[in-house]
Length: 364
Image (cartoon, rainbow, N blue to C red; front, side, top):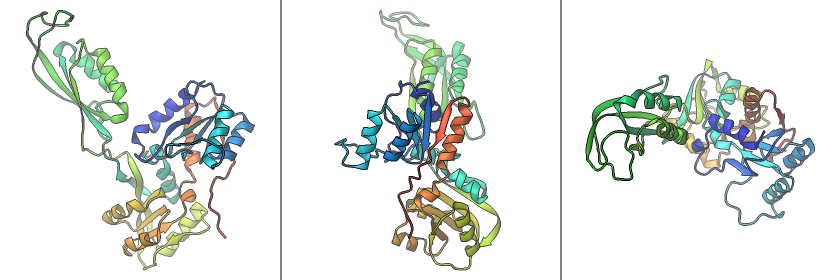
């Protein structure tokens, strides 16, 4: 097996196109054609994790957080990033990071957090924008069903709980082939008008290459005419955070105890207790201060996240209970999510869960 055999499946599950702009996901170190026999799964990839991979003879590390966030001007052993990358390269170890492509997966980071808390009737907190594209293409009527079927098989035409969605209108297609052409219909050197249909379908942007490949394979014209547009429709199945409901309302103190017990947190920072009941809960693993406005708009009773600053607690304006449970603590189930997915997809391959605790934060 080679690296891409694993990463291609991961990218069908968590497309790189759905990662946040600031992020750095995908194969960070190595070569997609490198042979591998074992994979180590870790939360972070630091030097001690690379040492673990060397010891266990794992040629690929799949981590949640990327070791490289931004462009490196130097790779040396003066920093923990440089030491990690240098050691990985020296020992032919590939590093793949998944991070916000998993954050934006409805069955990713926040699903596990919501599962542990017992939240019901869940939806994405902040649906991701600009994930849907629209294809307009023009097909001779004789090949319409062939092209249409191929696009559906490539993943186009899915809207919510519906598949094979399209809009078709008929008209005349005009063209004049030159002497170098080999037209499917029409006469060289003469303008032709043919009965054609305009086929319109939407698709997730990560499927663009696959959809266009299917179009070119099945369209009878030498040069198919098509247009692709970004559309503003929001895919409610992709995005950050999760909103759900407790089965029964509970008090704030009881909710804090539930969260502390569920996450095994040593410390939870929170705003003032007001005596409200908690029923509607939002969770966002990792740094979630940017979502406070959305939490207010959605009239949430309690919001669980991490990395809040002093003034972020003021922003809650005592309209909801806000909990900072710690960055690592809020994402602690991530490694298991990745491991379970890969073992299901590759039941006969060796996936090893890292034993290294990479949480850099200690409590006194």
